[in-house]
Length: 543
Image 1 (tube, helix red, strand yellow):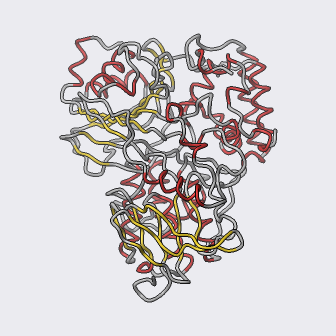
Image 2: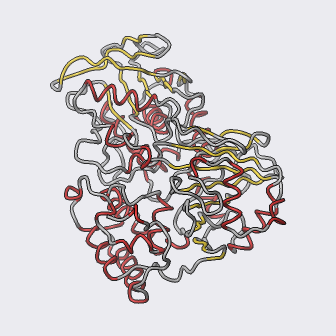
Protein backbone atom coordinates (compact mmCIF):
# COMPACT_ATOMS: atom_id res chain seq x y z
CA UNK A 1 0.00 0.00 0.00
CA UNK A 2 1.52 3.30 -1.05
CA UNK A 3 1.43 6.48 0.98
CA UNK A 4 -1.15 9.15 0.33
CA UNK A 5 1.15 10.88 -2.18
CA UNK A 6 1.80 7.66 -4.11
CA UNK A 7 5.23 7.12 -2.53
CA UNK A 8 6.33 4.30 -0.26
CA UNK A 9 4.43 4.16 3.00
CA UNK A 10 6.15 4.02 6.40
CA UNK A 11 4.17 2.30 9.16
CA UNK A 12 4.90 2.72 12.87
CA UNK A 13 3.60 -0.04 15.16
CA UNK A 14 3.20 1.55 18.59
CA UNK A 15 2.67 5.16 19.61
CA UNK A 16 5.50 5.66 22.10
CA UNK A 17 8.47 7.96 21.86
CA UNK A 18 10.33 5.50 19.59
CA UNK A 19 7.66 5.71 16.89
CA UNK A 20 7.32 9.49 17.25
CA UNK A 21 11.09 9.91 16.99
CA UNK A 22 11.35 7.58 14.00
CA UNK A 23 8.66 9.58 12.18
CA UNK A 24 10.50 12.81 12.90
CA UNK A 25 13.87 11.44 11.73
CA UNK A 26 12.25 10.16 8.53
CA UNK A 27 10.86 13.61 7.76
CA UNK A 28 13.89 15.63 8.84
CA UNK A 29 16.76 13.45 7.68
CA UNK A 30 15.43 11.03 5.08
CA UNK A 31 13.17 13.40 3.14
CA UNK A 32 10.05 11.28 3.68
CA UNK A 33 6.81 13.28 3.34
CA UNK A 34 4.78 13.27 6.54
CA UNK A 35 1.73 12.14 4.56
CA UNK A 36 3.54 8.84 3.89
CA UNK A 37 3.85 8.03 7.61
CA UNK A 38 1.15 6.26 9.59
CA UNK A 39 1.33 5.56 13.33
CA UNK A 40 -0.80 2.79 14.85
CA UNK A 41 -1.26 3.21 18.61
CA UNK A 42 -3.40 0.92 20.77
CA UNK A 43 -3.83 3.76 23.29
CA UNK A 44 -6.05 6.85 22.97
CA UNK A 45 -3.08 9.18 23.53
CA UNK A 46 0.38 8.88 21.95
CA UNK A 47 3.53 8.97 24.04
CA UNK A 48 3.63 5.55 25.65
CA UNK A 49 5.33 5.79 29.04
CA UNK A 50 5.73 9.58 28.67
CA UNK A 51 2.14 10.29 29.62
CA UNK A 52 -0.01 12.75 31.54
CA UNK A 53 -3.75 12.98 32.04
CA UNK A 54 -6.51 13.93 34.46
CA UNK A 55 -7.50 17.15 36.13
CA UNK A 56 -8.30 18.74 39.47
CA UNK A 57 -11.63 16.98 39.96
CA UNK A 58 -10.44 13.41 39.41
CA UNK A 59 -6.77 13.99 40.16
CA UNK A 60 -3.85 14.41 37.81
CA UNK A 61 -1.91 11.33 36.71
CA UNK A 62 1.57 10.74 35.41
CA UNK A 63 2.77 7.17 35.65
CA UNK A 64 6.35 8.35 35.98
CA UNK A 65 9.09 10.32 34.28
CA UNK A 66 12.30 9.09 32.72
CA UNK A 67 15.71 10.35 33.73
CA UNK A 68 17.16 13.11 31.53
CA UNK A 69 20.71 14.45 31.25
CA UNK A 70 22.97 16.43 28.92
CA UNK A 71 24.64 13.44 27.29
CA UNK A 72 21.41 12.21 25.72
CA UNK A 73 22.73 13.43 22.41
CA UNK A 74 20.17 11.81 20.10
CA UNK A 75 17.27 13.11 22.17
CA UNK A 76 18.59 16.67 22.24
CA UNK A 77 19.36 16.49 18.52
CA UNK A 78 15.79 15.37 17.82
CA UNK A 79 14.21 18.10 19.91
CA UNK A 80 16.50 20.82 18.55
CA UNK A 81 14.04 21.07 15.65
CA UNK A 82 10.77 20.82 17.60
CA UNK A 83 9.21 24.11 18.81
CA UNK A 84 8.54 24.23 22.53
CA UNK A 85 5.01 24.10 23.90
CA UNK A 86 5.07 27.68 25.25
CA UNK A 87 7.24 29.56 22.75
CA UNK A 88 7.47 28.42 19.11
CA UNK A 89 10.53 30.62 18.63
CA UNK A 90 12.67 28.30 20.76
CA UNK A 91 13.14 24.57 20.54
CA UNK A 92 12.18 21.97 23.11
CA UNK A 93 15.89 21.34 23.70
CA UNK A 94 16.57 25.03 24.33
CA UNK A 95 13.57 25.20 26.66
CA UNK A 96 14.87 22.28 28.72
CA UNK A 97 18.31 23.85 29.09
CA UNK A 98 16.83 27.28 29.82
CA UNK A 99 14.51 25.87 32.47
CA UNK A 100 17.41 24.17 34.23
CA UNK A 101 19.32 27.44 34.20
CA UNK A 102 16.31 29.22 35.70
CA UNK A 103 15.64 26.56 38.32
CA UNK A 104 18.95 25.23 39.58
CA UNK A 105 18.09 22.07 41.44
CA UNK A 106 20.27 20.39 44.07
CA UNK A 107 18.75 18.11 46.66
CA UNK A 108 19.40 18.96 50.29
CA UNK A 109 17.50 15.93 51.49
CA UNK A 110 17.88 12.79 49.41
CA UNK A 111 17.09 10.38 52.27
CA UNK A 112 14.73 10.43 55.24
CA UNK A 113 14.79 8.06 58.21
CA UNK A 114 12.64 8.15 61.34
CA UNK A 115 10.85 11.18 59.94
CA UNK A 116 14.01 13.29 59.71
CA UNK A 117 16.79 13.98 57.24
CA UNK A 118 19.11 10.97 57.12
CA UNK A 119 22.89 11.20 57.35
CA UNK A 120 24.25 11.45 53.82
CA UNK A 121 27.79 12.35 54.77
CA UNK A 122 28.91 8.88 53.72
CA UNK A 123 27.72 6.44 51.11
CA UNK A 124 28.10 3.62 53.62
CA UNK A 125 30.36 1.52 51.41
CA UNK A 126 32.93 -0.83 52.82
CA UNK A 127 36.28 -1.66 51.23
CA UNK A 128 34.88 -4.87 49.76
CA UNK A 129 31.99 -2.96 48.18
CA UNK A 130 34.36 -0.53 46.50
CA UNK A 131 36.47 -3.37 45.13
CA UNK A 132 33.31 -5.04 43.78
CA UNK A 133 32.16 -1.81 42.11
CA UNK A 134 35.54 -1.34 40.46
CA UNK A 135 35.63 -4.95 39.28
CA UNK A 136 32.19 -4.50 37.76
CA UNK A 137 33.40 -1.56 35.70
CA UNK A 138 36.15 -3.55 34.02
CA UNK A 139 34.71 -7.04 33.59
CA UNK A 140 33.48 -7.75 30.02
CA UNK A 141 29.70 -7.70 29.69
CA UNK A 142 29.62 -11.13 28.05
CA UNK A 143 30.80 -12.67 31.32
CA UNK A 144 27.75 -11.34 33.15
CA UNK A 145 25.09 -13.10 31.08
CA UNK A 146 22.19 -14.21 33.25
CA UNK A 147 23.74 -12.94 36.48
CA UNK A 148 21.92 -10.81 39.04
CA UNK A 149 23.17 -7.81 41.00
CA UNK A 150 22.66 -9.80 44.19
CA UNK A 151 25.13 -12.43 43.01
CA UNK A 152 27.97 -9.89 42.81
CA UNK A 153 27.79 -7.90 46.03
CA UNK A 154 27.82 -8.88 49.69
CA UNK A 155 24.66 -8.47 51.73
CA UNK A 156 25.84 -5.33 53.52
CA UNK A 157 26.10 -3.51 50.19
CA UNK A 158 22.30 -3.54 49.94
CA UNK A 159 22.05 -1.70 53.26
CA UNK A 160 24.31 1.17 52.20
CA UNK A 161 23.23 4.70 51.41
CA UNK A 162 24.81 4.21 48.00
CA UNK A 163 22.50 1.34 47.11
CA UNK A 164 19.38 3.03 48.51
CA UNK A 165 20.05 6.17 46.47
CA UNK A 166 21.20 4.29 43.36
CA UNK A 167 18.39 1.75 43.34
CA UNK A 168 15.57 4.24 43.95
CA UNK A 169 16.95 6.75 41.44
CA UNK A 170 17.11 4.12 38.67
CA UNK A 171 14.63 1.47 40.00
CA UNK A 172 17.09 -1.39 40.33
CA UNK A 173 16.43 -4.48 42.45
CA UNK A 174 19.00 -7.05 43.61
CA UNK A 175 17.43 -9.65 41.31
CA UNK A 176 17.87 -7.45 38.22
CA UNK A 177 20.56 -7.91 35.60
CA UNK A 178 24.12 -7.27 36.69
CA UNK A 179 24.94 -6.38 33.07
CA UNK A 180 22.43 -3.51 33.21
CA UNK A 181 23.92 -2.15 36.42
CA UNK A 182 27.35 -2.29 34.78
CA UNK A 183 26.04 -0.29 31.82
CA UNK A 184 24.52 2.29 34.18
CA UNK A 185 27.76 2.58 36.15
CA UNK A 186 29.75 3.21 32.98
CA UNK A 187 27.14 5.42 31.27
CA UNK A 188 26.54 7.69 34.28
CA UNK A 189 29.82 7.57 36.13
CA UNK A 190 30.16 11.33 35.64
CA UNK A 191 27.08 11.77 37.88
CA UNK A 192 28.55 9.84 40.80
CA UNK A 193 30.05 12.87 42.63
CA UNK A 194 26.57 14.44 42.69
CA UNK A 195 24.66 11.29 43.65
CA UNK A 196 23.52 12.57 47.05
CA UNK A 197 22.28 15.83 45.52
CA UNK A 198 20.90 14.33 42.26
CA UNK A 199 23.19 16.83 40.53
CA UNK A 200 23.44 16.68 36.76
CA UNK A 201 19.95 15.30 36.22
CA UNK A 202 17.84 17.63 34.06
CA UNK A 203 14.14 18.38 34.51
CA UNK A 204 11.62 19.38 31.88
CA UNK A 205 9.48 22.47 32.46
CA UNK A 206 6.31 20.39 32.75
CA UNK A 207 5.71 16.67 32.85
CA UNK A 208 7.35 14.83 29.98
CA UNK A 209 4.14 14.47 28.00
CA UNK A 210 3.44 18.21 28.00
CA UNK A 211 7.10 19.13 27.49
CA UNK A 212 8.21 16.47 24.98
CA UNK A 213 5.38 14.43 23.48
CA UNK A 214 2.75 17.10 22.93
CA UNK A 215 4.98 19.48 20.90
CA UNK A 216 6.46 16.55 18.94
CA UNK A 217 2.99 15.22 18.05
CA UNK A 218 1.91 18.71 16.98
CA UNK A 219 5.01 19.00 14.74
CA UNK A 220 4.28 15.63 13.13
CA UNK A 221 0.60 16.38 12.58
CA UNK A 222 1.45 19.71 10.96
CA UNK A 223 3.47 17.72 8.41
CA UNK A 224 0.66 15.33 7.63
CA UNK A 225 1.57 12.30 9.72
CA UNK A 226 -1.53 10.15 10.29
CA UNK A 227 -2.24 8.96 13.84
CA UNK A 228 -4.55 5.99 14.24
CA UNK A 229 -5.44 5.99 17.93
CA UNK A 230 -6.88 2.93 19.70
CA UNK A 231 -5.81 0.87 16.69
CA UNK A 232 -4.32 -2.37 17.94
CA UNK A 233 -1.99 -4.31 15.64
CA UNK A 234 -2.49 -8.03 16.31
CA UNK A 235 -0.09 -9.50 13.80
CA UNK A 236 2.39 -9.04 10.98
CA UNK A 237 2.56 -11.41 8.05
CA UNK A 238 6.23 -12.04 7.28
CA UNK A 239 7.20 -13.93 4.16
CA UNK A 240 10.61 -15.44 3.50
CA UNK A 241 13.43 -16.65 5.71
CA UNK A 242 16.71 -15.51 7.21
CA UNK A 243 18.11 -15.16 3.69
CA UNK A 244 15.50 -12.53 2.93
CA UNK A 245 12.10 -11.78 4.48
CA UNK A 246 9.52 -9.04 4.26
CA UNK A 247 6.39 -7.88 6.06
CA UNK A 248 3.63 -8.10 3.47
CA UNK A 249 0.56 -7.46 5.64
CA UNK A 250 -0.44 -5.69 8.87
CA UNK A 251 -3.40 -7.19 10.78
CA UNK A 252 -5.49 -5.03 13.11
CA UNK A 253 -7.94 -5.97 15.85
CA UNK A 254 -10.80 -4.23 14.02
CA UNK A 255 -10.51 -6.74 11.18
CA UNK A 256 -8.51 -4.69 8.72
CA UNK A 257 -5.75 -6.39 6.74
CA UNK A 258 -3.36 -3.87 5.19
CA UNK A 259 -1.36 -5.23 2.25
CA UNK A 260 2.10 -3.70 1.84
CA UNK A 261 3.78 -2.77 -1.40
CA UNK A 262 7.33 -3.64 -2.38
CA UNK A 263 8.72 -0.27 -1.21
CA UNK A 264 6.74 0.06 2.03
CA UNK A 265 8.52 -0.01 5.40
CA UNK A 266 7.47 -1.14 8.90
CA UNK A 267 8.94 0.02 12.23
CA UNK A 268 7.91 -2.16 15.18
CA UNK A 269 8.19 -1.20 18.86
CA UNK A 270 8.57 -4.41 20.87
CA UNK A 271 7.14 -4.68 24.38
CA UNK A 272 6.11 -1.87 26.69
CA UNK A 273 7.02 -0.99 30.25
CA UNK A 274 3.51 0.43 30.84
CA UNK A 275 1.47 -2.31 29.17
CA UNK A 276 -1.09 -3.82 31.53
CA UNK A 277 -1.19 -0.80 33.87
CA UNK A 278 -4.17 -0.61 36.23
CA UNK A 279 -5.40 2.37 38.21
CA UNK A 280 -7.00 3.06 41.55
CA UNK A 281 -8.41 6.04 43.41
CA UNK A 282 -8.61 7.40 46.93
CA UNK A 283 -10.80 4.47 48.01
CA UNK A 284 -9.81 1.77 45.51
CA UNK A 285 -6.54 -0.06 44.92
CA UNK A 286 -5.43 -0.83 41.38
CA UNK A 287 -6.37 -4.28 40.16
CA UNK A 288 -3.68 -6.94 40.50
CA UNK A 289 -4.94 -8.46 37.27
CA UNK A 290 -3.06 -6.75 34.43
CA UNK A 291 -5.00 -4.79 31.83
CA UNK A 292 -4.57 -5.86 28.18
CA UNK A 293 -0.95 -6.19 27.02
CA UNK A 294 -1.05 -5.65 23.24
CA UNK A 295 2.64 -4.83 22.85
CA UNK A 296 3.74 -7.99 24.65
CA UNK A 297 1.15 -10.08 22.83
CA UNK A 298 2.47 -8.93 19.45
CA UNK A 299 6.10 -9.53 20.40
CA UNK A 300 5.32 -13.02 21.75
CA UNK A 301 3.47 -13.87 18.55
CA UNK A 302 6.33 -12.69 16.35
CA UNK A 303 9.01 -14.43 18.44
CA UNK A 304 7.06 -17.71 18.44
CA UNK A 305 6.83 -17.76 14.64
CA UNK A 306 10.07 -16.18 13.50
CA UNK A 307 13.74 -16.50 14.41
CA UNK A 308 15.68 -13.41 15.42
CA UNK A 309 12.92 -11.65 17.37
CA UNK A 310 14.43 -12.29 20.78
CA UNK A 311 12.85 -13.93 23.80
CA UNK A 312 10.13 -11.77 25.39
CA UNK A 313 9.61 -14.28 28.22
CA UNK A 314 13.02 -13.31 29.61
CA UNK A 315 11.52 -9.94 30.50
CA UNK A 316 7.78 -10.38 31.09
CA UNK A 317 7.38 -13.78 32.75
CA UNK A 318 7.55 -12.74 36.43
CA UNK A 319 5.54 -9.62 37.27
CA UNK A 320 6.33 -9.93 40.99
CA UNK A 321 9.86 -8.94 40.03
CA UNK A 322 9.04 -6.30 37.43
CA UNK A 323 6.14 -4.39 39.03
CA UNK A 324 5.85 -1.38 41.22
CA UNK A 325 3.12 1.08 42.13
CA UNK A 326 3.36 4.81 41.58
CA UNK A 327 0.98 7.47 42.86
CA UNK A 328 0.14 10.99 41.76
CA UNK A 329 -1.34 13.35 44.36
CA UNK A 330 -3.25 16.54 43.61
CA UNK A 331 -3.47 18.89 46.61
CA UNK A 332 -5.70 21.91 47.11
CA UNK A 333 -4.15 22.86 50.45
CA UNK A 334 -0.57 24.21 50.69
CA UNK A 335 0.23 22.87 54.17
CA UNK A 336 1.92 19.64 53.19
CA UNK A 337 3.93 21.31 50.45
CA UNK A 338 5.17 23.92 52.94
CA UNK A 339 6.03 21.18 55.45
CA UNK A 340 8.12 19.31 52.88
CA UNK A 341 9.95 22.51 51.95
CA UNK A 342 10.87 23.06 55.61
CA UNK A 343 11.84 19.42 56.17
CA UNK A 344 14.04 19.12 53.09
CA UNK A 345 15.39 22.65 52.85
CA UNK A 346 14.39 22.78 49.20
CA UNK A 347 11.82 25.08 47.67
CA UNK A 348 9.28 23.15 45.61
CA UNK A 349 10.88 21.98 42.37
CA UNK A 350 14.49 22.65 43.42
CA UNK A 351 15.19 19.31 45.11
CA UNK A 352 14.52 15.90 43.70
CA UNK A 353 13.48 12.41 44.66
CA UNK A 354 13.25 11.95 48.44
CA UNK A 355 13.47 8.34 49.64
CA UNK A 356 12.25 7.13 53.02
CA UNK A 357 14.98 4.59 53.57
CA UNK A 358 13.39 2.82 56.55
CA UNK A 359 10.03 2.47 54.84
CA UNK A 360 8.82 -1.10 54.30
CA UNK A 361 7.63 -0.09 50.84
CA UNK A 362 10.90 1.79 50.20
CA UNK A 363 8.73 4.78 49.37
CA UNK A 364 10.03 7.78 47.45
CA UNK A 365 8.34 11.03 46.44
CA UNK A 366 9.14 14.22 44.58
CA UNK A 367 7.64 17.70 44.42
CA UNK A 368 7.93 19.10 40.92
CA UNK A 369 8.21 22.72 39.95
CA UNK A 370 4.63 23.94 39.72
CA UNK A 371 2.60 23.88 37.57
CA UNK A 372 3.56 20.35 36.58
CA UNK A 373 0.75 20.20 34.03
CA UNK A 374 0.31 23.02 31.54
CA UNK A 375 -3.41 23.36 32.36
CA UNK A 376 -2.96 23.04 36.13
CA UNK A 377 -4.65 25.80 38.17
CA UNK A 378 -2.31 27.97 40.25
CA UNK A 379 -3.98 27.01 43.55
CA UNK A 380 -3.07 23.32 43.22
CA UNK A 381 0.09 21.31 43.82
CA UNK A 382 0.92 17.98 42.23
CA UNK A 383 3.49 15.54 43.58
CA UNK A 384 4.45 12.03 42.57
CA UNK A 385 5.86 9.00 44.30
CA UNK A 386 6.39 5.28 44.08
CA UNK A 387 7.27 2.26 46.17
CA UNK A 388 10.17 0.17 44.94
CA UNK A 389 9.13 -2.67 47.25
CA UNK A 390 5.37 -2.71 46.81
CA UNK A 391 5.31 -6.43 47.57
CA UNK A 392 6.04 -5.78 51.26
CA UNK A 393 3.71 -4.65 54.02
CA UNK A 394 3.80 -1.02 54.99
CA UNK A 395 4.82 0.07 58.49
CA UNK A 396 1.56 1.96 59.14
CA UNK A 397 -0.67 0.25 56.59
CA UNK A 398 -0.26 -3.51 57.13
CA UNK A 399 -0.59 -4.62 53.54
CA UNK A 400 1.52 -4.61 50.37
CA UNK A 401 1.59 -1.26 48.62
CA UNK A 402 0.15 -2.75 45.45
CA UNK A 403 -2.98 -3.62 47.43
CA UNK A 404 -3.31 -0.14 48.97
CA UNK A 405 -5.85 2.54 48.11
CA UNK A 406 -4.82 6.12 47.52
CA UNK A 407 -5.92 7.15 51.00
CA UNK A 408 -3.90 4.29 52.50
CA UNK A 409 -0.82 5.41 50.56
CA UNK A 410 -1.23 8.90 52.02
CA UNK A 411 -1.67 7.39 55.49
CA UNK A 412 1.58 5.44 55.12
CA UNK A 413 3.39 8.54 53.89
CA UNK A 414 2.03 10.58 56.79
CA UNK A 415 3.15 7.91 59.26
CA UNK A 416 6.64 7.76 57.81
CA UNK A 417 6.93 11.55 58.10
CA UNK A 418 5.55 11.46 61.66
CA UNK A 419 2.62 13.72 60.86
CA UNK A 420 0.16 13.89 63.74
CA UNK A 421 -3.62 13.83 63.44
CA UNK A 422 -3.68 17.63 63.59
CA UNK A 423 -1.79 17.78 60.29
CA UNK A 424 -3.94 15.36 58.34
CA UNK A 425 -6.16 18.27 57.34
CA UNK A 426 -3.44 19.10 54.82
CA UNK A 427 -4.81 16.23 52.74
CA UNK A 428 -8.45 17.37 52.80
CA UNK A 429 -9.75 17.19 49.26
CA UNK A 430 -6.57 15.54 47.97
CA UNK A 431 -6.99 13.30 44.96
CA UNK A 432 -4.70 10.29 44.80
CA UNK A 433 -4.34 8.12 41.70
CA UNK A 434 -2.33 4.95 42.37
CA UNK A 435 -1.05 3.09 39.32
CA UNK A 436 0.26 -0.47 39.28
CA UNK A 437 2.58 -1.22 36.36
CA UNK A 438 3.34 -4.94 36.14
CA UNK A 439 6.20 -4.58 33.62
CA UNK A 440 7.74 -1.25 34.61
CA UNK A 441 11.23 -2.69 35.27
CA UNK A 442 10.96 -5.65 32.87
CA UNK A 443 13.84 -4.34 30.77
CA UNK A 444 16.15 -4.84 33.78
CA UNK A 445 15.55 -8.59 34.10
CA UNK A 446 18.59 -10.87 33.71
CA UNK A 447 19.25 -11.63 30.06
CA UNK A 448 21.51 -13.56 27.75
CA UNK A 449 22.74 -12.96 24.24
CA UNK A 450 19.81 -12.99 21.83
CA UNK A 451 17.11 -12.21 24.40
CA UNK A 452 17.07 -8.68 23.02
CA UNK A 453 16.90 -8.77 19.23
CA UNK A 454 18.92 -6.64 16.84
CA UNK A 455 17.42 -3.63 15.09
CA UNK A 456 17.10 -5.74 11.93
CA UNK A 457 16.66 -9.50 12.44
CA UNK A 458 18.57 -11.67 9.93
CA UNK A 459 17.13 -11.28 6.45
CA UNK A 460 14.87 -8.32 7.29
CA UNK A 461 14.35 -6.30 4.11
CA UNK A 462 11.55 -3.87 4.87
CA UNK A 463 11.14 -3.89 8.65
CA UNK A 464 13.11 -2.87 11.73
CA UNK A 465 12.63 -3.16 15.49
CA UNK A 466 12.70 -0.37 18.07
CA UNK A 467 12.16 0.37 21.73
CA UNK A 468 13.48 -0.62 25.14
CA UNK A 469 13.85 -4.31 24.29
CA UNK A 470 16.01 -3.99 21.16
CA UNK A 471 19.75 -4.27 21.72
CA UNK A 472 21.64 -0.95 21.59
CA UNK A 473 25.23 -1.64 22.67
CA UNK A 474 26.61 0.52 25.50
CA UNK A 475 23.37 2.41 26.05
CA UNK A 476 21.04 2.13 29.06
CA UNK A 477 17.40 1.08 29.04
CA UNK A 478 14.70 2.91 31.04
CA UNK A 479 15.73 6.20 29.41
CA UNK A 480 14.23 8.36 26.67
CA UNK A 481 17.60 8.28 24.95
CA UNK A 482 17.49 4.50 24.54
CA UNK A 483 14.15 4.64 22.73
CA UNK A 484 15.18 7.60 20.57
CA UNK A 485 18.49 5.97 19.66
CA UNK A 486 16.68 2.74 18.74
CA UNK A 487 14.35 4.74 16.48
CA UNK A 488 17.25 6.43 14.76
CA UNK A 489 18.97 3.08 14.26
CA UNK A 490 15.80 1.71 12.64
CA UNK A 491 15.50 4.69 10.30
CA UNK A 492 19.15 4.37 9.34
CA UNK A 493 18.78 0.64 8.70
CA UNK A 494 15.84 1.12 6.31
CA UNK A 495 16.78 4.38 4.60
CA UNK A 496 20.56 4.73 4.99
CA UNK A 497 20.00 8.17 6.52
CA UNK A 498 20.23 9.60 10.04
CA UNK A 499 22.83 7.33 11.67
CA UNK A 500 22.61 7.39 15.49
CA UNK A 501 25.03 9.66 17.30
CA UNK A 502 27.45 7.57 19.40
CA UNK A 503 27.10 7.12 23.14
CA UNK A 504 29.11 9.71 25.07
CA UNK A 505 31.80 7.66 26.81
CA UNK A 506 32.53 9.61 29.99
CA UNK A 507 33.87 6.35 31.42
CA UNK A 508 36.93 6.94 29.21
CA UNK A 509 37.59 10.44 30.57
CA UNK A 510 40.45 10.32 33.10
CA UNK A 511 39.13 13.38 34.94
CA UNK A 512 35.70 11.77 35.34
CA UNK A 513 37.23 8.53 36.58
CA UNK A 514 39.42 10.41 39.05
CA UNK A 515 36.46 12.29 40.52
CA UNK A 516 34.40 9.10 40.84
CA UNK A 517 37.29 7.24 42.46
CA UNK A 518 37.84 10.08 44.93
CA UNK A 519 34.19 9.91 46.01
CA UNK A 520 34.31 6.15 46.55
CA UNK A 521 37.72 6.00 48.18
CA UNK A 522 37.06 8.93 50.51
CA UNK A 523 33.83 7.33 51.61
CA UNK A 524 35.43 3.92 52.02
CA UNK A 525 38.17 5.34 54.20
CA UNK A 526 35.65 7.18 56.37
CA UNK A 527 33.16 4.40 56.86
CA UNK A 528 33.25 0.64 56.48
CA UNK A 529 29.95 0.01 58.22
CA UNK A 530 26.48 0.08 56.67
CA UNK A 531 24.54 3.28 57.24
CA UNK A 532 21.45 1.53 58.51
CA UNK A 533 20.34 -1.89 59.66
CA UNK A 534 17.05 -1.73 57.75
CA UNK A 535 16.89 -1.14 54.03
CA UNK A 536 16.57 -3.32 50.95
CA UNK A 537 18.97 -5.89 52.33
CA UNK A 538 16.35 -8.10 53.95
CA UNK A 539 16.24 -11.86 53.51
CA UNK A 540 14.84 -11.80 49.99
CA UNK A 541 17.47 -9.47 48.54
CA UNK A 542 20.65 -11.41 49.26
CA UNK A 543 22.45 -13.82 46.97
